[in-house]
Amino acid sequence: MRARDLLADFPTVGLDSPVIDAARLLADQDLPGLIVVGDEGSPVTILPGTEVLRLAVPAYCQDDPALARVVDEAHADAFLHGLDGRTVREALPRQRRELPLTDPDATVLELAALMARTRSPLVAVVGDDRRLIGAVTLQALLDRLLTR
Amino acid sequence: MRARDLLADFPTVGLDSPVIDAARLLADQDLPGLIVVGDEGSPVTILPGTEVLRLAVPAYCQDDPALARVVDEAHADAFLHGLDGRTVREALPRQRRELPLTDPDATVLELAALMARTRSPLVAVVGDDRRLIGAVTLQALLDRLLTR
Image (tube, rainbow over all chains, first blue to last red):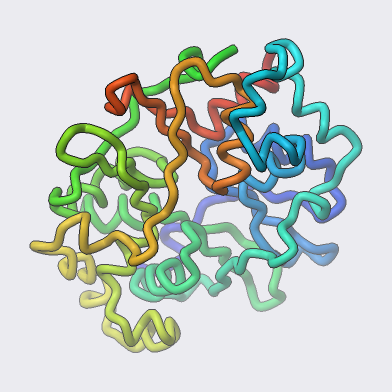
């Protein structure tokens, strides 16, 4: 079994995409994060869902989440408006997460080793031109290995 | 909207559960990790799926994933046997991940602040006795906030 047998389409966002679009993708699909692609369609990093929240939640609440409880409820439900006009680039952590890359010929052991080394539940699979073909998730890998 | 409105059952494993059971839960459900509970039913940490792979993948492959490609394919597909007889406790990283805890009254802003601060896509919700009631996921939170 090779990466090509485990590949699935994976939603991507651009560096200058509105981050609210990223939030919608994360809400619609149960994903560990989104693949961020550069102008040429090659994957550059992963945007973890929690970074989207870091951009939306006021800093004083992150420092002390208990403070958030004193915010009145209507306001508490509206904090995602903090994402209006912001881009994916702004949501990325200063130290960008390593998104492991491989090619369609990678074995399952190689995929697992990449996930283990980088602690990423996702490996991006690229073609010879470095463009994204799809991704292999930890779940897909375990599912295939345990149901054979 | 409060934590109690977003709660879902979440699968748990014990510290001494077989780690292969954890792998099966991760394969069956698309989860960012599993909640590890102590003897008294109170959550102690989260087991990220990638840590299960770290326990199964031989160290020489993690250091250099390209080496994994030279392993013959039948053997490459069988590496999960490395989990036989191992426990969840053995799979946990030395520095355990912080699993944020809250109570059913937490507001959505508080839940988001907890996820943002700890970079955990999951908040465990506990009762007065510290036992796990359920969990709120990042996806559930974003889904409810964006579809109101």
